[in-house]
Every structure is written in C-alpha cells, then in structure tokens.
Image (cartoon, rainbow, N blue to C red; front, side, top):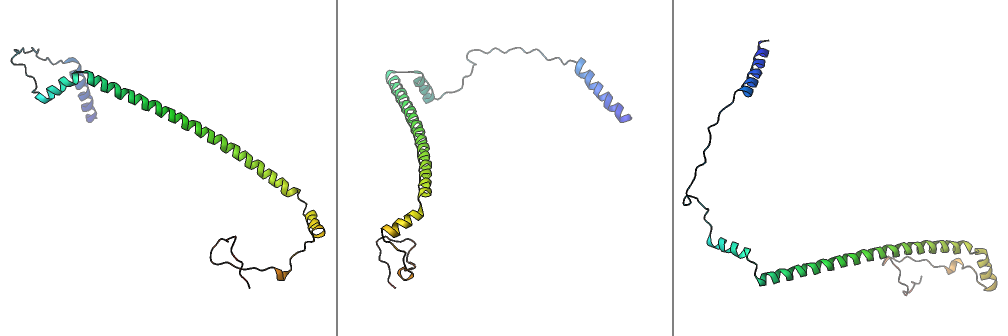
Length: 161
C-alpha cells in the first residue's frame, strides 16, 4: 500500500509541477556587429571564377546546348520509331504463328482423313491381280545391324552376307 501512495504522489507532483510552475527565460537581445566584423567564408579564387562562368551563357554555350537537345530529341524519336516497329513485327509474327498452327491442324486432319479413306484390301487386290506383285519370301529378306553410327546414309552399300 505504501508503494502505491508513493507512485501516486510522484505522479501528482509531476503533474502539478509541470502545469503550474513556469520557468522564466531571460530576454535575448540581438547583438549588432559592424560591417567589418561580419565574416564571410573564404572562397577560393578558382571556385569564384567557376561560379561566374556558370552564371554566364554565351553564344557558343547556347549553340552547343541546342545541338545537344536536338540530338537527344532525334535519338528519342528514333527510339520510339524502332520500338513501334518491333511491336508491329511481334504482332505480325504472332499472327503468322497462329496461321501456321491453324494450317498444321488442317493438314493433320486431312492426313488423318486420307489415311482412313485408303482401303488396304483394294490396294492389295490391285497390286496382286493387276500389277502381278507378290509378297517377299523369307530368303529374300536380309537383316543387318549397323554399328558404325546411329544414322543410315542413303547412298551407302548394303553389306553382303
């Protein structure tokens, strides 16, 4: 209980002290200095000369600035033109790719239609009866393994057994 009273009294004391007691500050009087006493920072002669040159805009500087601005404007216009050209080409490529995909789909559908429309019995009948073709015998079929490379050259000789 005693600890609570101390905390409470401390708070109230701080509250009263902060609200009612005012500290007086002495009035400040500005000090006047003579023109001789006013100090300016020391400026280097080169720095002062560069500042003066920076403030001057003579004719060659204006001409050079104008040329730089025109070159910059020219480069920006060319950049925008190239960007537009690239965008147009990208859209053209996308449309051509879409057209190619459509043509491939149509081609596959037609190929499937052709493959399903061929009557193999009719082909066999025409080949054997009209053209005189026969199946190969087992002794006419030769099989061989090519181990030199993975692909077959079209004009290469077939090895003899």
